[in-house]
Length: 339
Image (tube, rainbow, N blue to C red; front, side):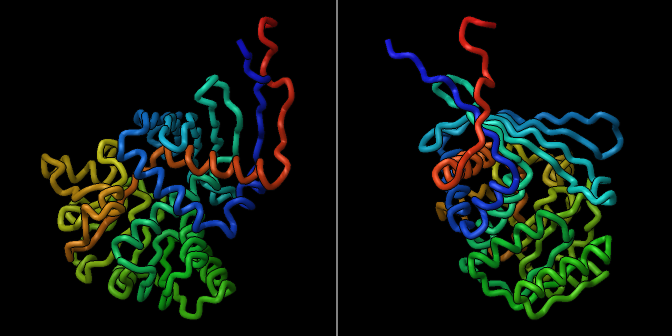
């Protein structure tokens, strides 16, 4: 019987991850699309995310997202992410993460990757994928962004690299300085019409594509009149919209069982209405044309599936392995029989 080769263990830092993504966002978008379809086809095992809150009611938390994605991917693993909103004030990113990938033949982990860039990339890809299928094209009259942080910058990078036609941007952030820095970055990347507003109603009024990427723990957008122009809303932070806004919208998520929990806006709406009939379907329904926009405000609230991290992390690992040296740690695992 032929034995297994000695397991190799690679460590891929943020710079290598970013290098694999930059210039290849169309490929990343396709990876996320295929992962969604594999998940919808039942080719995954995806337990609920586990939340660890060391000091409630503070918003600080750790999240474990284990999973397995089969089909063309055949990979298992887990993302372990820390979310500390106060980091931003101290000059650090809110979230830090690692992603572990496991070989499904031996069970051994074969790589650990810096996970926050992967997480932000797959979140942005998911958002832009939904926006494209809601709009039917890569075009928006004006994009509104509430929360000008890391996730928003990744979404803008996808819009830019995928060649979206955008008339301009309106920005809103609790920090005018942060919004101003985001505006300068957009201008430096060739966007001609960018403005910062302090009035979220103003933003909703003039934008047809709206990104919510805040650290909100409870809904603060409570007036259904905000949705009067029937925009497409990418509700990435999951807790910005009040149940009364969700109830009048066409709601799409990535996985209903995962998204309607943990006091998300969808979960609060279920508690208000006593059912989940307000959820029209999933992104896989959009991708396979089983669901089309119906004229109501369109709200996409993705919980963020761990299998997306696995799919994208595996693709990034392969790009790094094939195109640049990958740092491995010899002897990381004990020699069989020596423990």
